[in-house]
Amino acid sequence: HGREAPALGLEEVRVTAHLFKPERRRFASVPVSHIDLDVPTAWFMAIPDEPPLRMAVFDDFDGDGRTDFACATGPATFAVWLFGGEGFPAGPNWERTFPEPLLGVEFKRVGGTILALRGENAVYLLKPGR
Image (cartoon, rainbow, N blue to C red; front, side, top):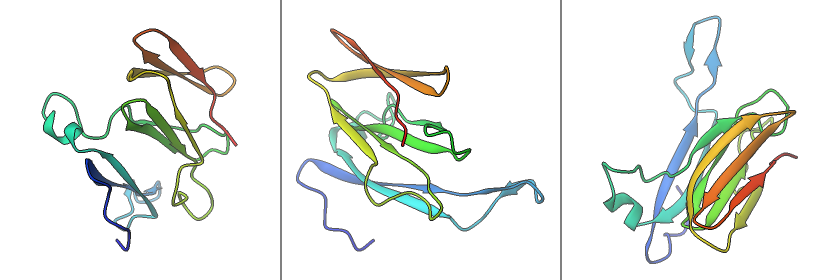
């Protein structure tokens, strides 16, 4: 992919986005965009109990009518990529590291998407956007 190799203890994951063509009632065969990210190698060892891409959420976070993407990129780190006119940016638009490992994510639309990230000792409410 033209990227540097992931750091020790990390593995590369590629997420691709295919546009839905309503007139053909199917997705385009060629991806419109992709995201390359590195996740902990240990996450691949947990298959089939958990997927290597953890806490993935697809929703319109910034209200532009396009589906955006968010996921955990580490045990205590969560990132959001906003889909723009040219696709997804090379790096996340927004990324935060929390003081404890994240255990799960829930989301709800209330005047925009709100993400609730659960830790062992706290729930972190996020409203990612522009």
